[in-house]
Image (tube, rainbow, N blue to C red; front, side, top):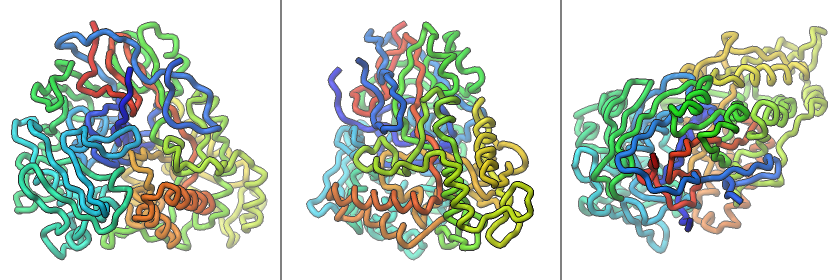
Length: 605
């Protein structure tokens, strides 16, 4: 099949924390979309991205069934989760992986992206960028309509920016790409009611004026529109941000302009979709789809019995699914990584920035470095995940081959080096109980938060705790147990003082710029670690000079070295995402360079 370059849905989000969605649909990406992930485990071409530490794996990226999709087919898709999905079904407000898996089927960005995650003119809108790279003109194509029949207008995209920049906005997506719009900082601070850098020409044409020329405009431009006429207008006082986020028109009856319409939602459990016959690309192959939550403990049996057509399989269950006759397994290197985060401060909601506490329990970088050296990630990836996860080395993942610094080897398991680091830094066992005291000679107990879900969650948490005990650190689970996804992130996001360290995961989205996860003003920066050097490098990585690829690579190499040394988070595992497709499924791919799209996906019988 001839390959065209286009983008993978950015979410595919949010994650131990990150969500990368179950299906890599290509019906419009619309810009960077990172977030917390559920820690889901997720001659043929193999997954894009690579690393010398990765297992030698050979999986196809596309279904092999080359039959034509049957007319009016139906499909059942699993959302593999141990808990209900949250149900915040709007791009501006959602933060979790499972909601992203729903959004991809009924909502999409106006601008499409290619295999390098750069915006293109193949989506529902086209763009032109000025010679100075500071003005983007966007034009919506004809026959692009919301599911209620109303045309998608430029004022709908303006509305998304009005929401993201609103002083009352409490979500996670006010980042560099939003703030870079001229006039956005003043609007965000409540000094003006309009965003001066967004010019509406007419219903189909608009301009974005940027303060800085940046390569992130091409890889992180936010093109997800919001149906102002349908959800209610915050700008006229018709509704408030808080009411909008919790409204039925976002949580129960949301609309988009994607290939499928939402017919019914059983909150937290399932979604029924119907074909959008007026979809701007053409009539979708499937008449309907059901997407339902299936427990990781029962997903393989459901796949084996033919109850599920498409599912992301937890990698710890690879051995039980690899020989199932009626399915084929696809895999690619995921846009995600798990990590251990070290809490070092608080989120200042008034200033909307992270504030680092120099006296935090985890303030010693030698302590953080030692805890990374103590983790036996290679064994966990090999024994618990059948080699489908492999040690993380850097905070820019191997998928971004140009920017991933292969010279950084991470901190391979070395408990003796970990012990020496702690000794030299003054963490010593002064009372002979087998556990080290802090640098002041006081008892040191490190409180660890981790998520439940799947058969590996508890063994991994216990393995890390034993690793740390082996170097003399007393680490205990917060509340003495694992927490479900929603409770875990409530604690982490709100800087619960019970948490010293936590195990999370990130879905990186399509833009290699890491400022949305680790910047001073990034609410996703859950460790609350900041530094002036970090600020400087992140700013340089999105500057006009960064249009020079060599310069941007140099800056991001410096940033990766900084994060390797400071260890605000310790990357633990990169991963392959494993997808099971029933052999009746046609036109499905995990390849971001394929010409297949979600509306073409179907079944042959």
